Length: 61
Image 1 (cartoon, rainbow, N blue to C red):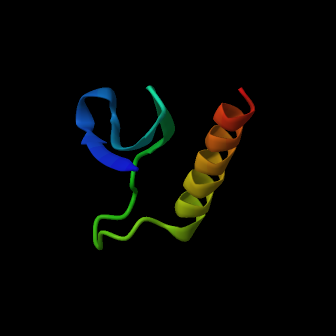
Image 2: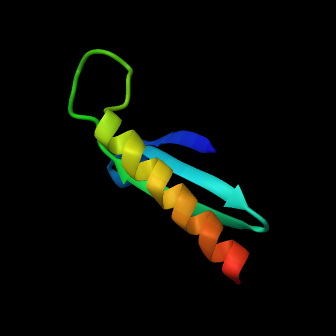
């Protein structure tokens, strides 16, 4: 899984993963906190669910 900062599109945090030959953008969000580097647990749970769903979709074809 890759996490990138992408400030040009207004979404400084972009999480994506390469599954097979396809890159899936799992989540893009703008952190609101001005301190700390931890991603909120709510965001992590959503990313994990989307990754699981994407892998399942690829597995089913």
